[in-house]
Image (tube, helix red, strand yellow):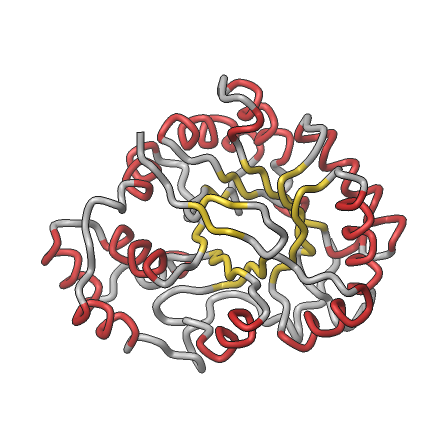
Length: 279
């Protein structure tokens, strides 16, 4: 069984550094994929209300045979439930769909600045944490100014900011802010939604180490202290993506990967300041 390092969060809890994501995985496919992931050694499972697969993930958790306290389950608040009471109800629905008494972590999925209710949503998450229904609370796709606003309103720091991060979009401009506030960065789309898998530089590094391109990318991200949650529905790739602790990148490899950053063109998903869709 692969031994995955833990990251210590600013609230005293710990999270596995490598986890399994289920974005764009249909509900019926989520169950076998998550079971395969748990069997391979993943203990952090990341879903969201907006993924419409919490019931499938919950079934996998129950069918896996792994004790609940050995798993770290994350979900995220949908954009249309940022009002305080709606956020509480939405969390309760997630807990029911997952079949869990508590969640290890719950995040605000997007700030939705046009709606301007994310402070109310954060207050709801703080109260749910105080009640013991969520162990750790965090955000996703939040710019530093949004984080500063929720902290000013509540005095509570998020433990994690989950953001798009991969070799072509490295988020260097926000790293110092998060380090200073001890907010862990968690990478979604750590493989660039597939956009970086054909990069010739990464291909050369992979060939050099006798590893896959995805393994090289994940190793590079883990070396930086980032939390990563790759996704796949293929058993071989699920196992391959966790098998990243048996080799090391050298300084030259890291320099070449660092040089791939393209802040202007590298992003594959939506931008936090303009993503205002409700779901």
